[in-house]
Image (cartoon, rainbow, N blue to C red):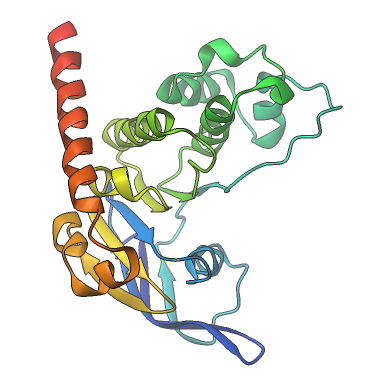
Length: 242
């Protein structure tokens, strides 16, 4: 059974139809990225999956006992609240030393445990939020524009980390992203959403589809190749170090 299976789903707020005819599935260990313009219903789809948006029609099947980890677009930290990373993680999730250590190791934040949350950089905060979501050892990670505010090297690093999480845990990842220059190299499948699914499939086929190019243009083709070059080069140098 798929982890998540959505059939003919629609979501409506009042008279406004936000999503219609959505068909989507997610399998073990798969990385699927949702792209689309602002207001296209991406976050609403996530809310439907976690049960905070009303489903008007269609079905949403979730595998029994499925554990879902969620990383929001941003977390507002009270600048006057003194709380360390370690305390934040322990308060946010029921945890033990082993699960906390495993989560921190997966995202490389062991050295941040004694840091104050309000002193973290954007990249450090996103890694901590990712660690928090991983503590419960989820079957699925939902990432809602988790790289917002990061610079381009930070974004590429984040996606490599996500790929490492998938390889180490077989956790499936469903993510929303605006990072068109790297998202293609980081995904098994891409879904282009604009109130409905315009196109979907392997990254290369989606990038060259008329529906995708009507929304985003074709300028991502070159940057996709550039990302793949850096991505493959990094893997090559990592292997050489070993």
